[in-house]
Image (cartoon, rainbow over all chains, first blue to last red; front, side, top):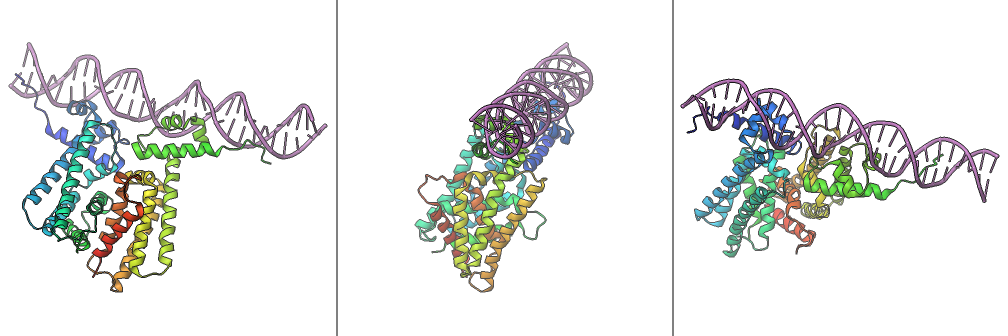
Amino acid sequence: MARTKAPNPEVRRRILDVSLDLFATKGFAATGVQEIVTKAGVTKGALYHYFKSKDEILFEIYGKVFGRELDSLQRIVAEGQDPERTLRAIIVDLVVHTADSTRESAVFARGGHAESPHWQAMQEQWRRYQEGFRQVIRDGQESGVFAAKASPEVVSWSVFGFTNSMHTWYRPEGRKSPAAIGDELADLVLTGLQS
Amino acid sequence: MARTKAPNPEVRRRILDVSLDLFATKGFAATGVQEIVTKAGVTKGALYHYFKSKDEILFEIYGKVFGRELDSLQRIVAEGQDPERTLRAIIVDLVVHTADSTRESAVFARGGHAESPHWQAMQEQWRRYQEGFRQVIRDGQESGVFAAKASPEVVSWSVFGFTNSMHTWYRPEGRKSPAAIGDELADLVLTGLQS
DNA sequence: GTAGGCATACCAACCGGTCGGCATTGACTT
DNA sequence: AAGTCAATGCCGACCGGTTGGTATGCCTAC
């Protein structure tokens, strides 16, 4: 029954892209809806046609990142390699993926909106990712491959802290490739875990 | 000459303290001046009597943290111990100090205000801190105490990333003391740097 | 003809910031 | 010791501008 003018996916995409830019640069609260639509070359009507609120734009941005990341971790773990190889693969993957989405991670790093249910769902996914990461370390420690003295929490936070801060210094045009950076970080962590 | 009513330092302190709380929790842009004064139990008149703008409150918060941190690093380096002891002392000091000012570091982590000259001055101080930190690593590498393969940049970002993300997970009532956490991180990094 | 894509005009609430004024003070005069 | 004066701490009503969000209807494709 719905014969209608075709929706323009380009419009929606542009709103998301411009929002991502602005949120990453100036922050969510400091970005105005008017600013988004002006830069995107659309109108408020269009924006509120595709999104029910400014918040919804933010959560759509969040959503994309975490789903992929969790999948990636589970896939690597499922390969069943030894802990060292597994941990290295996770770290490299995380760094590469983060380098590939610096704007998203900048938005995430700024945080905010602690009250929204969307935000809490996000946090839950992120918590599961952390847990998966730490489990790899624990497995390695139990099998004696990794030294037991380093706590999985401290190790994981040095890695997550690294990636969470990448958006402040990583530049795609820099000398080192994301994979090379990831390998270096993995070297550091794996050597640090040696028993 | 000064016939005047005495200023009330308590008022100023409360404004700063409440601002710090709100900026850390909701972010700078999302916090209204009205909200600050209401929570602090003062009026806008009082706030704008002590500060010329909302921004000035923010920069007063930033200022306190970085001054101390840079001093601390220089003092430790000046002691002239071997690279391992020096690096450990710097890391522990940084973690302890960050744990002691989680609200400030949450505000800093959210960033923002890239255009202000105050902000750029801040960034410059922060850059000098990083440089000092890396120099310690380079010295250790040149003297053969540290392995040469890890780049000082990656090492420093894993430490700074760690501290920059502490505000998301560190709780004073937790089991481990900040000094113990700092030691663990230092263990990880120093082992990772072993040649 | 009719349903949905999107523009436009508009809203109340709120934003950071200002300003005239009053109360309080200590120094100075008497 | 009492009174005067000027400077300051602080109040709160008010400002123009902007905020996120909406109501309405034109236009187009079927």
